[in-house]
Image 1 (cartoon, helix red, strand yellow):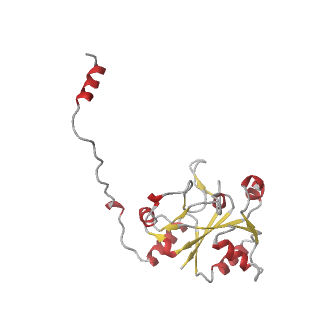
Image 2 (cartoon, helix red, strand yellow):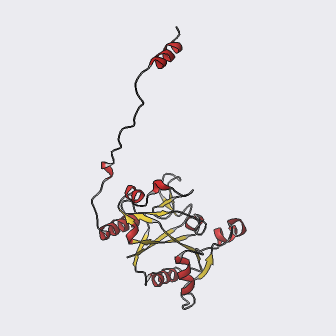
Length: 219
């Protein structure tokens, strides 16, 4: 009998029940039950360590803070979602004030205005699905109203994060939001502005995407 036949015969003669996977142990991922204030402090520390920027706001003040930030940067325009509450709030605000830049709405296929999107948009603003304090990361689930290019193309990306949706770890976020029930085609984890170390292994920021990431934490 050849070696091949010997191995195959052993497999045929093999007995025993079905193999069962060992119980997963996630204890190594457990963290203390941090307060919201502690999570915010850690998130801010981690994000700022990779050149991100954090501003503390309230429901009533975030538009005022955004106007100050964009005014200081001389932003000409701001890309907003059409249907999301953030976009509607900003459109309403422009009816009463003149310190916000011209609003652009992402309401058509990218093919019809690709040149404008990649060359003329100064700032984009998006909502977030939450944040991860331990890594200073934002969670974005793009959809038709807020396509992923909104957070990947403009030189400045502004993200609105509610403090109540800031989790300690990635695992905690997935469990709390029940990710296993279904996820979108694209799910983004954003930790600071774009960066690469491809060139001579030297870390450079703002090479392949936004040069600045600004997070407005709504407390």
